[in-house]
Image 1 (tube, rainbow, N blue to C red):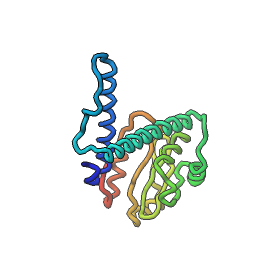
Image 2: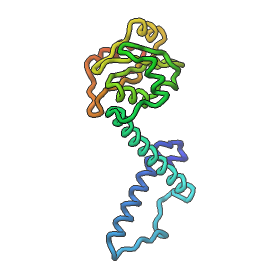
Image 3: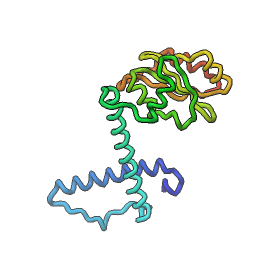
Image 4: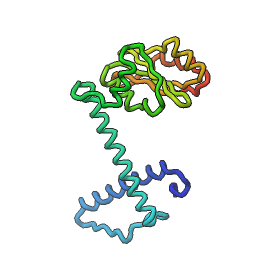
Length: 194
């Protein structure tokens, strides 16, 4: 139903929920020796073999994403603890902004949120990203804040770059600071969201 309507995200969520409910049913039946599961009598309206196959695939995709996120969190913690070093593309990016206050303009694909998180985990500093039509500007901040260099602000304002992300060295609760709200007010061309 959701798949046919083109709502792939909703379909994936429903698929994961269905697999979870099936696992709960199996667990319940397995724990009660007097019960026997009759799969031939189970039915979900509008859920034929084709949809079932898509559901299984969506569930596997969701599990893979959660696993990847967990692995990346471990990698970030290892960076923070000094157990590993930045990956090659992250090192290249960091070489462009090695000092607090440095900025660089890169192609969009070269500055990902994962790379931003890795730079922060490795240095303990904040980084901020502004996104334009074809490029991104990355600015290296301190351990507690960041500021937009005047020359960078001129480029950002003239080309209406959007403030798309900034990182915090803490991996726990993130607090929106009053300075963040004040900075966002400068981006009059951008839809506001913190």
